[in-house]
Image 1 (tube, rainbow, N blue to C red):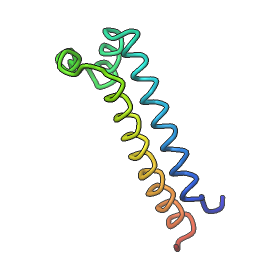
Image 2 (cartoon, rainbow, N blue to C red):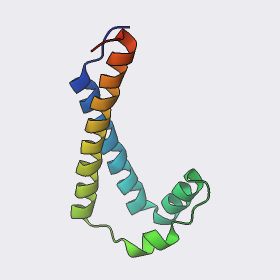
Image 3 (cartoon, rainbow, N blue to C red):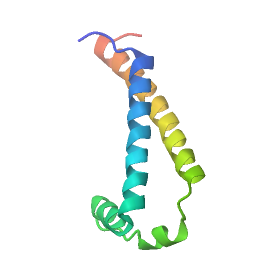
Image 4 (cartoon, rainbow, N blue to C red):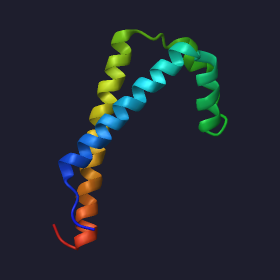
Length: 92
């Protein structure tokens, strides 16, 4: 397999992360208790009920999270592809 496009992988992971954040916000808006229960199970039984009560959802807060996670995904994808290219080819 050849080199990965660093920017393409970064964008793909950034968009994927942003979409997952939007789906999570939608699930929380529709099924708040079930979503909290799911993530508690997903995180090995942690109790997130206090977090649910403390953090109110608003469009601005959701947008902030979606954009923030998209940027984190972009950076993670760029780092991943860069490391992959070094490891796979043995050089930069």
